[in-house]
Image (cartoon, rainbow, N blue to C red; front, side, top):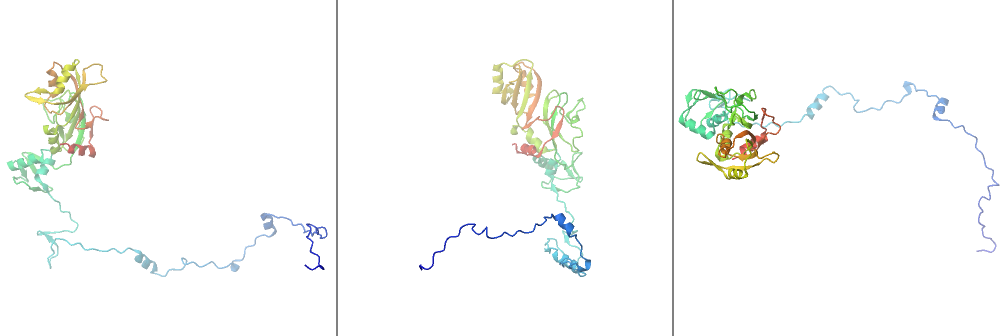
Length: 347
């Protein structure tokens, strides 16, 4: 560094403020937006001086026929596939024919069903028994005896079994909680009250009871017009389980209870007991719960008569898995699809 020049001294802060004169700005009156608008009132422009409205594509006038052409272009194109029919169309003929008959487009050609199935659907018997009836020559179709198996019945044909005209009607399954004093029969001139009176007007189809309950026995009773299912439920081989609530005139001894549980012989046939026990909530040993699958007439009453007891009250609580839940005494209901399928699964 040259000795002739002295180093620059650092500048002291605010050393020149006193020398300079601060210039003051004139005071401005602050005005709000409303005050500013009042100072400069809005003056709309004349319509001639306004800028033109921007042109949009949608505002463009459409020439005649363009809209129809667009709509036609937007429609999906359907691919038409010609269906090949087995019906013959002879050249020169006006209509297509099949088996010598004219085929009308869209007409429904009903298909017949086998005669044995028609008879079974009518509720007379099962299909196997229907085949035997056909071979025996007791079935008539349109007034003529039919004895050939596999014969089909068309809609409108009249099928007769003796003097009875059969009908291929819809299947109905009805469950009744029978009350006391009604006989389980479809028609009995000597009976004062029948179970058919309790289900009068339930359906237009002719249904009948599956099995029997005594006049004084209450509980579940199934009605149907499905002959094949009814035959299966009543057959001893199916071993349909039935639970009864039994009330005796006097308490049953423990020894007699064990004898009944081992099985009882009636009319040369051994009756098997699936289960028997005292009712826990009962005050004494007069009330029992008894499960049995035998279909003999008055079987429970006859069993206890062997031990010197009389059945005062007998109520069927469960039949083939069906219960009396939400079914008061003397009322009925139709089975749902699940319950019908469970019945058909039984062997």
